[in-house]
Image (tube, rainbow over all chains, first blue to last red; front, side, top):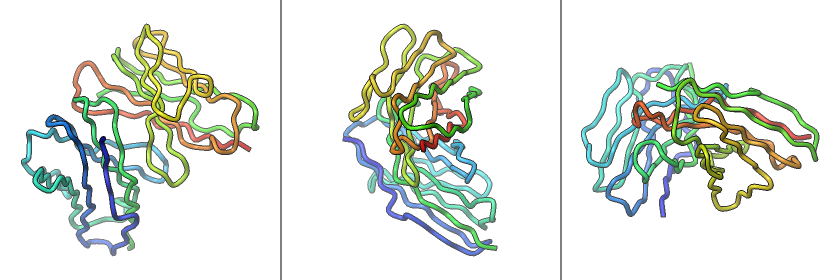
Length: 115
Length: 115
């Protein structure tokens, strides 16, 4: 069975601090995809990244970076020099069927950046 | 990337009534997905809608409660039937684009409150 665990329910930091959001997943498939989404207070889901199971290279996009480690089944997300606009709920998700099929979501981490 | 329009964006409904949520995509897509996000919770897949066939429902969701239509490759509806306060949630439509299977795009969601 597929499962995504985001153990951090809420995180609160002061602006400009770095923050890492943890994601641990479980799957029996050798081919799978991992996602991160941002959900601001307005409610929409904003796609951040997709990573397939064969690509363990870390990804950096501006202040965002992702660390994928198959050995520990983790796909952690780091925000560097956090800003108030980063405040949102962040979801990690897993797709086993390939591409962007059915997603299994973690419980989400509510991130609050204080000025 | 696919552009997904979901209507209505929000509604307040009386218990016992039904609400139909529409999802329109700006390109033809093979699969469309409907998710529910209960207050403070993660997203849970309700069903997968394929054009020309009946929707496939996930465990805990039934067609009588959440009938789905998929009349063509760019449109789908989800009806929440005989609503109760427990149905108060955000309902989101998602697609897997034909052009690229690198992302799962979501509509902006329908925030439903049942009173």
